[in-house]
Length: 226
Image 1 (cartoon, rainbow, N blue to C red):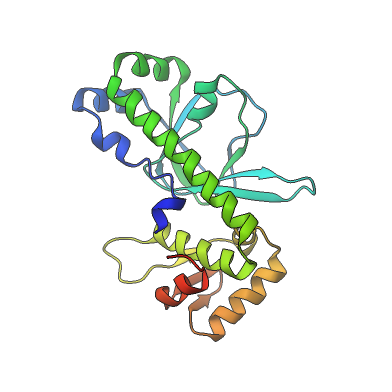
Image 2 (cartoon, rainbow, N blue to C red; image 1 turned 180 degrees about the horizontal axis):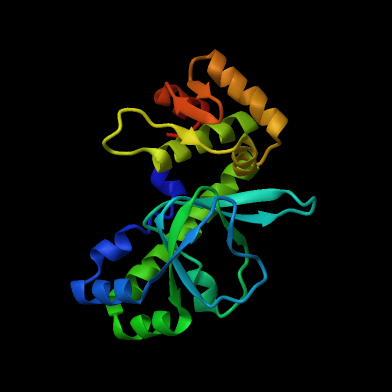
């Protein structure tokens, strides 16, 4: 279900031949980003691509009223910023770390080098890029066709998938209410009312900014998505 709404490019490194993977990992330059620190901003020219080693990064555009519309949240293991390099255009959105993050950078020259020499990397990147277009189309359809209640439920399910840790019994979503509202395409006040209703119906539990999903099956029904 959630695969329709996640880029899921984590497979790129794991499916590369060992020689190509070693080359890619050797040319990566790691940099630590603090929470709320921008990685790149809309309208600037790219100098390379990024690979998220640890943490989470939001991708967003500003609407005409100056409000963020979060398009996507990247998770560890995902590449980003490469579509602008491939199209030789400026960034069409802004990315910001939403928690402390470790991000690897690959320069344009190194990126072009591995594209030229590795047919596997080129194929996997094209596959990932094609999937991204499908995901973005699905997310746009949700924003335009679903109610706020449905959008909030769906985004909680998406975030639950991003925040879960395999060896942990419980998953806690730790995202600001403003970011969650921006993901769902609503305002914080409306989001608060929806979360209050979900909590009253025992679909979720909250502890400060943390949200725990208590009844995933019911949230799937609320999201009107199967």
